[in-house]
Length: 126
Image (cartoon, rainbow, N blue to C red; front, side, top):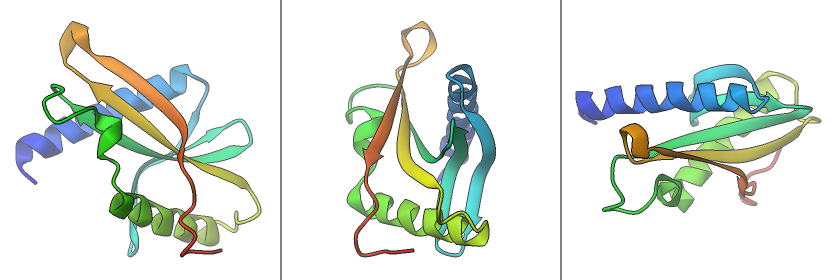
């Protein structure tokens, strides 16, 4: 990944974090990493632990950001989320997978939150 893409990703995650806070989320971790994968943001929305993937697109040339969360990426997020839940003895807590999509730039930017964007991959269990 290029330095420009990394910088854009970090800026997008910061904007997503601000957006989530304004919408009542409590941020627990940013850029959580385990040997099984990475999660952009882990937050709490009331009593639910939310594993949030952030996607950013400067234009719609390749579709919207939310469309870029492939099945493979969902599997990586799932594995990392299960690792987080086990590490934190939180397997009994409600959890879900959300996506924040930032599309466009400047005044044209649109931020979309998709709650329950995908379900736990059945290949993986607690």
